[in-house]
Image (cartoon, rainbow, N blue to C red; front, side, top):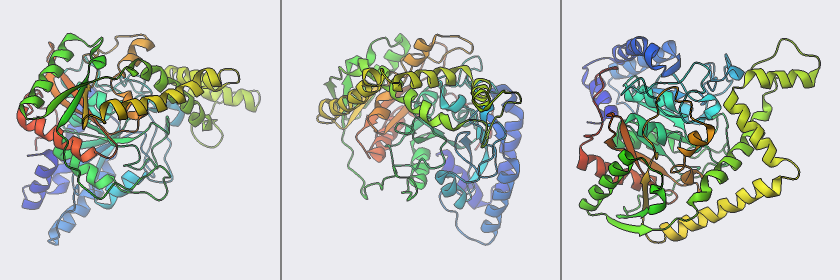
Length: 479
């Protein structure tokens, strides 16, 4: 039984109270978080107050709403009114927003139990979670390895069952890559399907709140609650009021297998065979523009980051330097001291590509390529099939402290960024283990608003493999 459904069954049957369950989760966090660093902050009082409200409702004989009483974690870049939201950065250490993110509003209205704010790469910029101000979240399957980034704490908390599910953010793969490394299902919805209001921006045209869960049933349950139109988010779109029939045709492009590690390639090839046995038609497709997706993504993402992070000046909120000569020196010191190395690297790159004399050569060209990539995936892939199958990440989970170059780190995004560039839904599903026993993920990318169909295909794959690839971890709460 899916974790969320099982928790609600336990609560409804009286097997345990919501307070008892929440205390078990909080105790597990107290025990394991020192090793995992999955949480930046734990919201104990908020969690217990919500649990008590759920118990009072059950005593009155009222039915639970979907997700009600289920403990979860939120990535630390999703705003929570009165609760620290630091983006894992010294720049926002101690910052408590004056408003809630729309997704948190929806969950709070249903008495979802917020256990805490999950660790992440600083301002969601990274692929290992190691740029966090508190150090990176670790992989529960082997704490010598990273949990992935940037939503590493979200993945670590769910994989260790220190949370039943988590909301993260995905700008170029930051939900799907940690899901692959930690043996979870990671859903990046269609751009606009889930409101971004209250998500602290990295790259606004690419950012999307996503879901990390144990399986497709849990992800679907969460998606159905948070995929609501938001009148205060100009990019929010109403989902079509239909359940599209699953198109059982899967495209496979050879370009995605260049440079993939042997363990990953074998696991993904096995996944293709499994889908074929399930009756899906496998269709060879071409995606020659793949070689341009990483430069396109990083030019656009860094340009938008440069613009979005310009608001951090030490005057209105956030980090402030104690010593400065004048306002210009003060702002310079705030940004030099408050931001970490990776964030500064991306701001400088973004400022460069937007600067006079380079705008046309880089930013404008990247925008033109973005449109070409959208057209090519629409014509070459979705003109012939319902989904595109790729590895989620071309490499196995990385060792902590591997000190890879930025180029090597950025290369781990090669399979995931296309979905963000083209504003498409994508899901990562566990499909195998590497030689060290660490999980591997396979990715399905669908056409716009085919989120439900992707979860249907993921569910088919899960039933066929019976989640045989994912280890049963004992670090957290048994449910």
